[in-house]
Image 1 (cartoon, helix red, strand yellow):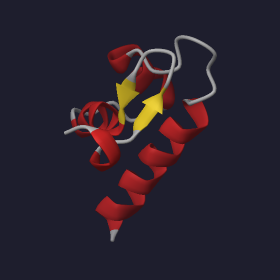
Image 2: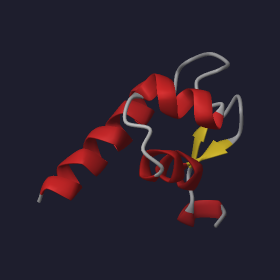
Image 3: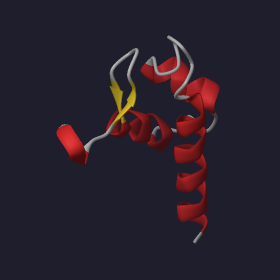
Length: 64
């Protein structure tokens, strides 16, 4: 996936939403683990809040 179908979450490390979601799906359930797995947040850290939002969204979607 690329382009608008797969938003770029981390500009510094060029990590797309699909990579974040794959890490979450693989069992990484907190931002530190997802960031370690994907490289997101390793530059300026500005995307960590968005990573946390994706984890929270995934958690709420799986509970519904």
